[in-house]
Figure: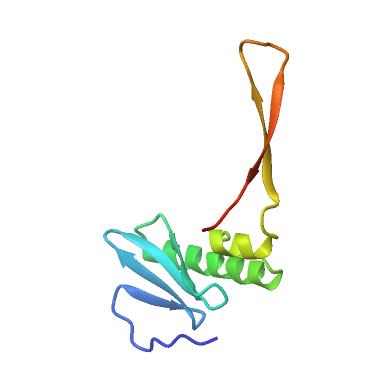
Length: 116
């Protein structure tokens, strides 16, 4: 995929036609639009050196693309996506509550995810 942006300022460097390394303050950052997730993947490259930033940005770009090829997502699920994936009112987890009055007694409670 090719970046829509054609002109870059002095503090922006294109990476493989669709990523961008940019300077924010003294440090360099990486940005890549993830079409499937409809968000930007952003990461600080942790350097003030331009050459190191390009090297780290290209490595991060290749890592992101490799993870996309095997089906991994960069961002975790939102609450809405989680509800749509799971059937409604299945136990999200089971919690065990212990009471201090009776040392050996326990109560199991199923916790549900409910969206209103």
